[in-house]
Image: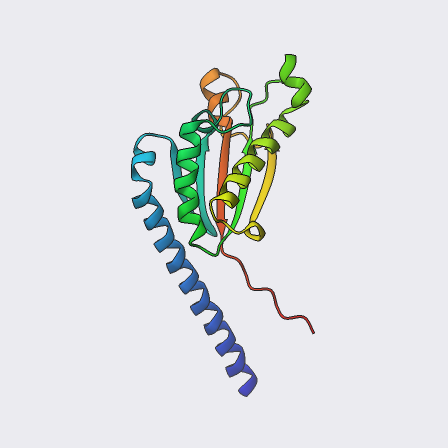
Length: 180
């Protein structure tokens, strides 16, 4: 009986911790939507509540010039505002770069031989800005998804534009267990 009560207590504690985590994520989501309301209204950024965190989707044409991994002024402003929100949190931040499936050619191909490199450079540039704006580096990761995670088929210019994006995913950091 004592063993079963202990198991029940552990499950109840885990549920309470998860409820607190969900409440914190909802509060973070609400604060971000409120703080970034003008950017959301302008279509510069989308904020999505996920089961295990929050995801911000930023169209690549909002923050980067075509074929470039350098932030433009509007992109820098939007991401600086996002960084201010993220810096105050403790969540892990994964920045994923996405491209369409069009092959990179010409002079651009010398710098970015494939969409993998372009997406990676863009994700890394966003990570560097977030860190420069106060987000702790140990909480950050840059990931290249290249053309392999499209949100639309790459069958039109409009769909390809939707596939070229940066996703910023916030997930609660789980405490690492103490090592012996």
